[in-house]
Length: 232
View (cartoon, rainbow, N blue to C red):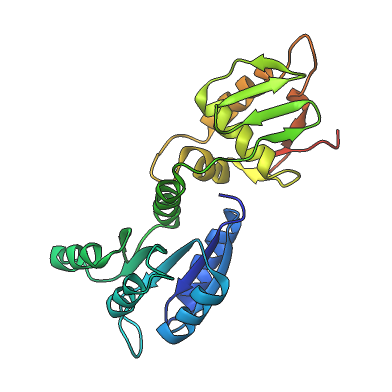
């Protein structure tokens, strides 16, 4: 999800800031709008990958704005998640029928919102070819789900693959175990933080073979967690 841009549309600045901080920590770029007029300009000019759209907005409501987006061929395919305090089933159905890709009810946990965003972006990105990631002689192919060390295939489990992919696309920054759980396991999956340590050990072992030792690129940061760094 690196490099994806999210537009947060909410008339309450405190809510926008809370969401923005959570998303930026997860590696997203964020834009903010307090009303539909500002939001429309940003969607046309900046072309965000996804819009978080509050239902209750000054001027035109979020649902009216969503109808407008879906009628315009320039914005018809924009991914939209509705944010609302409305919990009635009819409101949820209305939002999805108008064209929302998902629906999150306030108050919500940041991990849940992150999980929903990732799920929508994955659906929107199905069929797209991701670039091969290479660091020195270590190569990860997201499309074939294969890892190579010095051109030799590496055997590793799916969780270790996702963990390595995240590290290779977020180098030199330290992440806590909780952050890694959000990014690799997903916000809606509740596992203990020590699970991260187990998979880190497995990843290091998989990255160490007769050709080269890349396990030392996955570094322990005392008091924080882990980082992927070529400065060893």
